[in-house]
Length: 161
Image (spheres, one colour):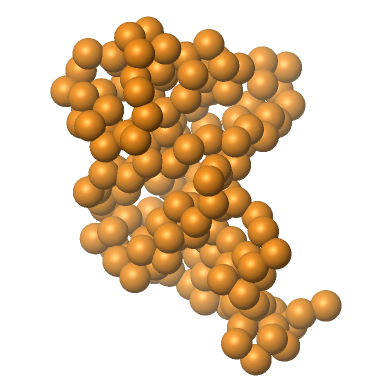
C-alpha cells in the first residue's frame, strides 16, 4: 500500500508517524543482509505529497540488501525526548525506482541534496503496517497505536515499568 493509501485510511495517525520519521536527521532502516541477519542503517526519509521515499548511496550495503530482499522496517530516530513524543515504526516493502524514470525525477525535485548520475539509489516504500509508542501525559503508562493495511487501527495502554 502506498503512503497515500495510509493517509486515506488513517489520516491523523499517518501524520503522526510522518512527524516522528522526519523529527531526527536520520531514521533507522532495518534490512536483511545476505547471510540472513539484520542490518540497521541510518537513512534520510523523504516525503512527497503521497509517497514515502528512501534515497541512499547506490553502492551502500543497505541498497544491496533491499534489492535482494525488499522487506524492511523504518524506525524514527531515538532521542531522550522520544519517550514523550513517541517513536514510530513502519514496515513494508522497498520498491526500487530506476534512475531516469518520472518517479525518480519527482523524488530528486523534493530531495534537498545533489543527485549525481549513478550515485543515488531510490526506493518507494509500500507500507504494510505502522505503529507508535509514547508515554502518556500522566506518565504512568505507555500508549501503543498501530495500523495494518486493510484493518482498523488499534490503541492499547500498557503500564510503565
